[in-house]
Image (cartoon, rainbow, N blue to C red; front, side):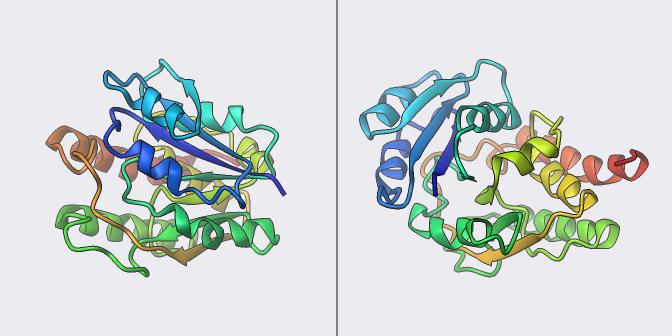
Length: 227
């Protein structure tokens, strides 16, 4: 079974080499690092570590993820994880296993159920995450405990979701559309570490506000859109 790892990045030169090298080579067919307009040496460090680097000029987390997914079209399962070292590639099999074994269609690594390293997630991040999870359960009956970025899905399933949110709304849109299409969604515990460098989302006021806006907007928006 071919497992492709997609790592969207923007200015992660300090961490990306360590992240790529930590991916278990015996379990993964391809490691794709998507450089989303970095102004540092992210692409070079990723390539030196053994990743296949592609470039996505359109800004946005969703744009980078979609570009990586298209580049991984020949995979049986795609795993998304962050390039800042907060996600642990050693836990890849726990995330993609249920999809590979056909026990789930979308698996999301739950930082809440795993070990959360001190300082890894600020208080406003934890509170916002809990509220979004509650909203998804209330509106769509989704039984998950986290909306994190460490997740696995088959390429065809992802294609069927017809993703539209190319910025901060990508993670929650994937869950909403999967629930609307009746896909089996599962949470698995993963550990979460302090990232290397400054967060592009919770590390800035602008990032926090934009992420909050999209995370709340998307679940409400799709209530009025037919499947």
